[in-house]
Image 1: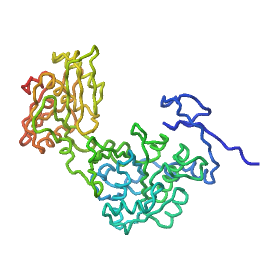
Image 2: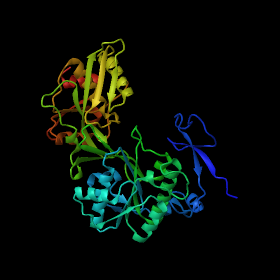
Image 3: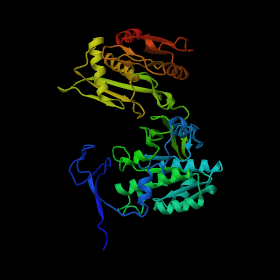
Image 4: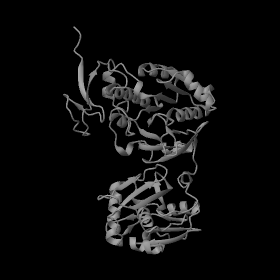
Length: 458
């Protein structure tokens, strides 16, 4: 008699499992996301479930006895891509790259695998969504040397690993993980169970055989990676490729990286010959109008391991209704409200009856607090209709008592501003450099009022 097939109830948003169906997931709080899945009887279930994602058991060791040798890395040939990965592709690592349709995921991976193949490494590109002819046409359009790129169209992870056993590539591309399936689950490809089991199988295989794997993942409407949350826990690195407001540019962002810094950004431009690196991303975000305008301010943020100059625009206008709006794009809206309260209390500038809009030019999202001073200056500039010259830069964190707190890497930020032709900087007093920065006049302030007075326009 056939065995009764087991079922489970899994949240499609976060991957939490439940013994029975429920209307709301208690982990992520979403409604109507718990789905019933079938758990197939797997021939290799024991080896998969007991080995863990690392792929093998290890003996108990003292931490001091662990080998601290640096992991072997392979350069992709793209400095910006290597930066996001932490210095190149780590042998035996698994990287999940996501992005919206048309962002360029398949394009950049095809360029990367062609570059790695030119260095003499064996590579394999596995496509489950496109035909070989489509990929060949893309390679021809990108003017890539396709003679060393091995291709395979397959969606079974067991069959893929059998081919990898014979070909022994150093780099394997899986495009995409959502269409792969494994014999360990009888559900349809793309389901929570299939994505989780396929990713687990490939990760264990990569660790056991020291093969680097890039897996392409789809994204949801809120730009987060589709599939169970366990997918992010399985992989070693997770990067997202997205476009800026200017469709010509792409930003590669690291959300998770076991071999490098999180939050690192890589910048590319999209052209007819594929994605090209942007060597000077600050210039990309500083394409300002010829005539200075009120409310436009430049600040220096820190992304990953480098400074980045961005323009912040503020607009203050009289409210036509009883409840003035506060809208922030690319900034934390709650922090904007806090800064406006500090401006009222400690600088005597009243904005409660005005509508205030703040925007980061270029579509980049600013998450650090070093932009606080620039936001306040931009708001006051728009409110007073005073123009900020193009050659002035601001950075500094604002406290609730109106003090300007120092930020990390202040000297590197000043050097980046001077390199791009800025003549004056208003910064926290604690960030004032001991040595002068060539070509840059520095005004250090300890409070918001001092910063406004030091600038001399308000």
